[in-house]
Length: 82
Image (cartoon, rainbow, N blue to C red; front, side):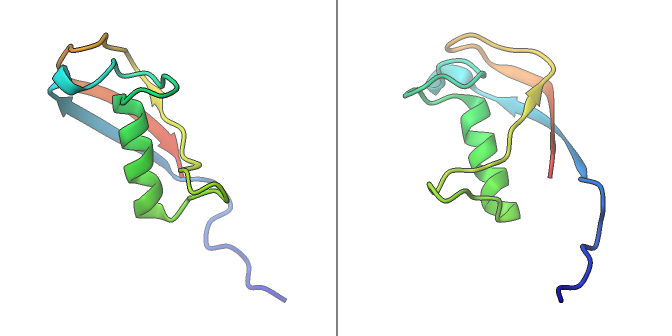
């Protein structure tokens, strides 16, 4: 038998982001494009080990706002359950 999990409920991770958007196609996920959300989800997935069978992060962010292609942000808030 396996030991019980350390926590029953997921932890809510809050992140406050600052970025130069010059090299991003906006903040929201877009297939085939580099986005802030995609990069942060990938990084958090690597940190937590939450990677699916396809090698991609299973982490999903909820963004408080969004930016368009090339737009910078200071203090953009997002959260994820881990």
